[in-house]
Image (cartoon, rainbow, N blue to C red):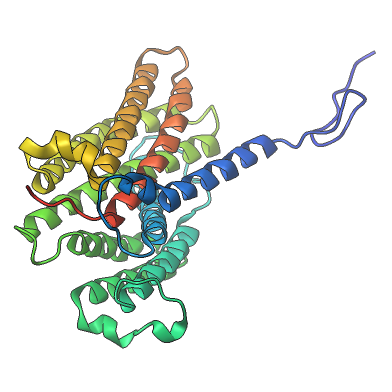
Length: 335
C-alpha cells in the first residue's frame, strides 16, 4: 500500500493546509514596511541632539528619494544582467518577467512627488493650489525635477515597447539630473562633485539592481541552467563596481567633511551619523559578497552562493533606503 502526500494547499488530518511561498510573501511585506519606517523615522533620530534643523517634511522627502533610487536600480539592473546573460555560451534565451514597467511607473510617481515639493518652495504641499508648476521652470532645481519626471515617464513607455533596451537613455538622464541636483552651483567645484555622484549612483544602481535580477534569472532557469556561470560573471563585474563605489564615496565624503573633522562630524552631525550607518551597511554587504564569491569557487554546489547573495540583496535594499535619508538631511558645514 502506497501513501500519497496531499497536494499543496490541501489540508490533511495533521493540521491546516499551508500555501507554498506564503511565508516568503509575508517576510517581504514585513521587510518593505520596515524599510519604509527608516526614512520616515530616521531623520528625527539622526538630528537628535545635533542642534541642526531639517527642512519641513524631511521624512517624506527621504522616502520618496529612496523609492526613486530603487526604481532606478531595478530596470538598470535588468539591462545589465540581461547583457551578461546573452554573453554566456549556451544560456537559455528565456528570462524572468520584467519588473521594469512597474519600477519606472513607481519612479515616475516618486519623481512627481519630489517635483511637487520643489514647486512649493521645498515645502510639503497641503493642497494642489499651493503647487506652482510654472515656477519649476524658473529655478535650476525645478528644471531638474521636471527632467526626472519626464525621464521616468519616457522610460516607462520604453519598457512597454518592442525595444525595452532604449529605456537606458531616459534612465541615464535621471542619473545625470540627480548628480547635478546633489551639487548646486554655489558649492565648491560642483562639477567634480556631480561627476563623483554620477559614477557612485550609476555603479550602485547596477550593483543592487543587477544582483536582484541575477537571482531572479537563476530561479527562472532552474538548477540545471548555467546559473553558477551567470552569478560568477556578475560577481567579477560587481567587484569593480564596489571598488568604484568605495572610491567615489570616500572622495565625496572628504569633500563635505574635511579629513581633520570626519571623526567628530560622524557622531555630532545628522549627515555624519547617517553616513556612518551607510558605511556599516556597505561593510556588511561587502562581507556577504565575499562569502558568496568564496562559495562560488570552493563549494561542491556553486549555487549555494545564492544564500548569502539573497541576504546581500536585503542589505543592499537597506543601503538604498539609508541613501535616501542621507540626501534629505542638511549637509554638514565645512569647518
